[in-house]
Length: 243
Image 1 (cartoon, rainbow, N blue to C red):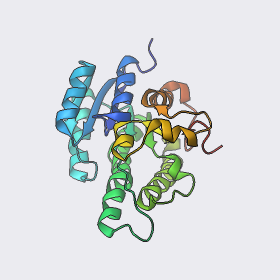
Image 2 (tube, rainbow, N blue to C red):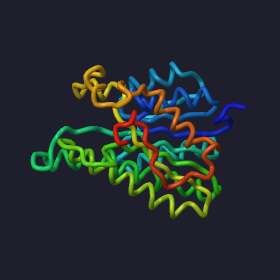
Image 3 (cartoon, rainbow, N blue to C red):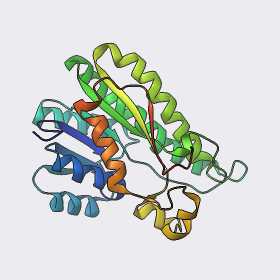
Image 4 (tube, rainbow, N blue to C red):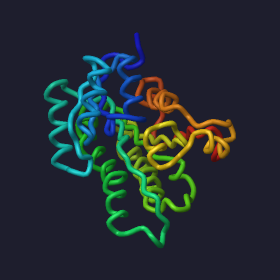
C-alpha cells in the first residue's frame, strides 16, 4: 500500500510552488487531492497535469463563505477530509516602521486568518470522525526574528502558536495538528522576490536551498499514519539555518 491510500486531502495555495509539489507527492502516494488557489489558469493546468486524482477549485482563503463552500463540496463528493494542508501564503518585504496598515492586513488575512478559517472549517468533520491531520505551513520566520519581514514574521509566529493551541484542543478527538517551518525553498515566490538560489545558499549550512519536493516529503509524513502520535509540534526543514 502507498502511504496515503484512500485519504482525501485539501491543499490550499496548491496551484504552483510548494503547494503543487505537495499535491504531486500526495497523488503519487495514493491520495485524492483537492488543490485550491486564486490563480485559476495555473491551478487548472496543475490539476490537469497531475491527473484524475487531483482537482482544482477557486478559493480565497480569507473568505469564510468560500471555506464553507469548498469544504462542503468535498464532504458531499467524498464523505470526509482526512488531511488539510494550510499552505497558502504571501510574503511582504517591509520592516516594523515602514509596513503600511494595508500591507499588514493583507499578509495577516492570508497567512494567519486563512489558517484559522481552515482549521475552523475542516476541524468539525475531523472531530466527529475522530480522525484527521492538519498541517499548517509556517516558516523559520516563525522561530526567530526576521528583519524587514515584519508582517510575514508575525503571521508565521501566529501560525506556530495557533497550531499548538488547536492541537491541545483536538488531541482527545484523535485529530493531529502540526506546523512545518521551511527555510529557503526553490519556488516561484523566491524568484519573484529577487532571490537567487546560488547567492542564498551561502546562508545555509548545508550549502544549498531546499527543493519543494523535500518539504513536501515532510508534509507527507505528517499527513500519513506514520505520524499518528505526533501533534502540537513544529517540524523544521532548513538545512541547519536555525541549528
